[in-house]
Each structure stands twice: as structure tokens, then as C-alpha cells.
Length: 96
Image (cartoon, one colour):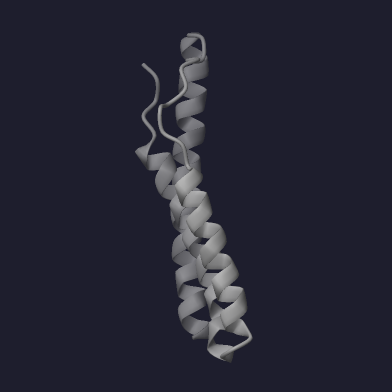
């Protein structure tokens, strides 16, 4: 399991760094264009995703007390979060 977490960690790190560098390039490009930052707020929110994250985290913490294998769920959740943030930078569309 250790090897799997290390490999997934490397993949998540590369995905995060690639997405972050794309986000920085988009931010610099938008800044150089000199247009004001958009002020509209998206209609969606992340309350549901945040609630699911809290419930999953609490569940995995509780399960770690039941069976030792659940101790690996924490690092996997962290790696999933880092990968998700990297993907978010690729999904984002720069303002034109």
C-alpha cells in the first residue's frame, strides 16, 4: 500500500503542478490584457461537496479505530484533493 500511495502522490503532485502553472499563465495573461477582473459570482456553490467531504473524513477517522487498514484512507483523500485542485485549473476558462 505504501508504494501505491507514493505513486499516486507523484501523479497527484504532477497534476497539481501542471494545473497550477496553467493557472499562473492564465492569471498573468489576464493581467497583461489590462481588463478589469469580472465581478459576477457563479450561481452554483459547493455546500454539498463540502458536506460530503466532512462526512467522509469523519467516517474514515471513525473507521481507523475499527480496522487498521482505514488509516490509509486519509492520505488517499489528501491526494484526491490535490489532484482535484490541479484539474480545476484546467477546467477554468480564462476571461477574454
